[in-house]
Image (cartoon, rainbow, N blue to C red; front, side, top):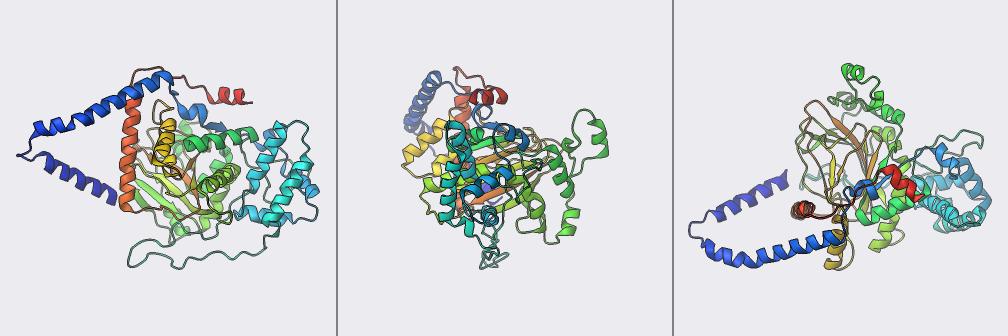
Length: 496
């Protein structure tokens, strides 16, 4: 709201300037000719680029969308079960403490599950390679990193100040490391009997995992379909008191699963009875944020991130290496929230979650069509925050942005997920429905406390987002060929 006030003041000043009676507009027009000429040359260059390198009609659908499979399906494709992982690792590292390894993975000590996924990808790509050899090297790496020595008890970091600072009025506990743990995906929460049916979280295959990491590195975002089964979505909705009306349930019989029936309104009374200190924060009118990190509700919802953790860790590790951060710099869960977009909630402004490396995971519990608060992304804009010269960063940003013919609006079904770089410019659209409420879970992982910038810098990046979005709309309106986007299934079938 404060940034909107700053924008209003700037517009007021511009109106005052434009109404000067003594202004020589002819002279101003002549002075503006070089600017108009530069704009015309820029439009010509964009037109030539579009003719030579046609953009995708839907960049997200073609290059940035992947589908999760059930654990049993992945086992049939060659991915070991949790019990098989246990057996292979025990054979490779005799005497190692695998309970300590699981503790280290939960506490985000290192990219353990992404290492496992990389090893499985290597085994699939290199014929004749022995699993025992690969896992022996992996066990040596983990032992050197100290993952097998993770202590049973953990001293959680405690911020120096908690609550609202009386001087700055800033919540000093927001975004700091408080020692939150994450669920496991490949390793399983505990050692499983070899004969037990595999029922772990749905996740990506090793090949799709690798392609998703590459797409995320270039474009800054990926969409993951079917991260959660509908039964799990239904359990989360029940726990968070997201209820559909009996009329909607009756109308949807035979059309929608009960877990996917729309929600008309959200009453936070039951949640606030459980946690009296739980208060919603309002970012824009109609959009409520319930910060549940470190609260009892976190335990109930954290399982939603399990299937994405191998990819989250791969992205975090790549970001750390690209930013030149030391190996002992560990990421942490900086935010867990339930975000509610009430009917007629207004648009957000363009913003980034953090100016420093990090990853954000969004898991919808209701359907998110474009008219109910879908997220708009400026593909490639995270490159503007990376290391390197300004021109090289801008070139990488524009190369990604102009590879699509329109600004991607991420529409999702319940149980899908959106994973994006915390430095990516994005905004949530208005909920234009007067009888539907949208609800999503948001998990953030950071190396440094967000947002990493002040009020004026945030306003400047909001204006930069407006400029890039306008540039992209103009590029899409230029005449020229456009590549037809392939469906998700056909893209993934060609990749296998």
